[in-house]
Image 1 (cartoon, one colour):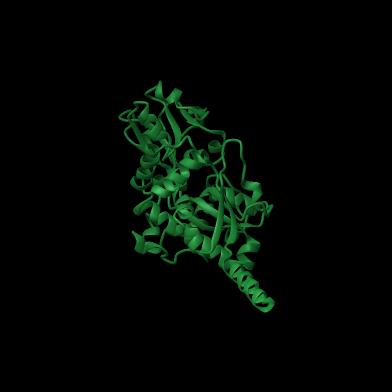
Image 2 (cartoon, helix red, strand yellow):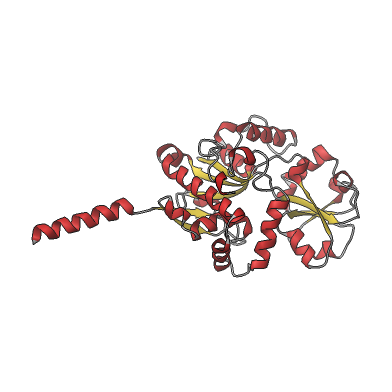
Length: 328
């Protein structure tokens, strides 16, 4: 009897050990939204679990800075906005590295009232252009250095559409999947100019991991990236109701109507599943492009030449494997 009990307990212990999923903490850079859809889809439809992962998605937001949590070991993966942030980490010898990029194009954009300007080049003639402080020290420098925009027209942007809506000549920065939708809902007829379409070549919605995890536990990194990629294909091309429900549960300010419009915008602007991703899969990284964006940032005066080792910014080790492409 005792022997049978010991055998039974041993079998239970072995089974629980074998089937225990790896706990993973993943921090995003903002409140849950359609731009995070693939991750919530992978969580809600069991994809992460299928890959042996127990994932906890921790939202960012206006009062939350998740960035220090990665090097501090409080989270395992971090969603970041663009490559400038990752380059700054390398410059400051913070041991983190980009392991995937889910947006082929940066959604950063400039919007104008339809018919007020003849095109991108004409926007430089706008009397007032609203740009945030962060934007003024990043993409605005590139816009002035490469595209003829002038500091004389620069005005601070306070993340409020009121000034834009009340002045047909006003031009402002926008996130391609957000402000154009909000402005349209307020009755404005808007033209959206993605900076990416004008040469702003940074990746966006990148995923960073600690260098020590990449070196010592590459299997965990691979499974998280593969599962997230599958989640994105399912969210974009399959039944994404589970992902949308998870997003709305995490962020009650979201509605199904908003999520549908945002997902449509992601596709129509070619922000995801475009360019190189069409050849090698969502999440793709081309190290030559990472180098090219660093060169662009140096030329525009955003970064100093020789200020960092570009090879430490990102790795293509876990992507470019065509994972999930059969789900389209």
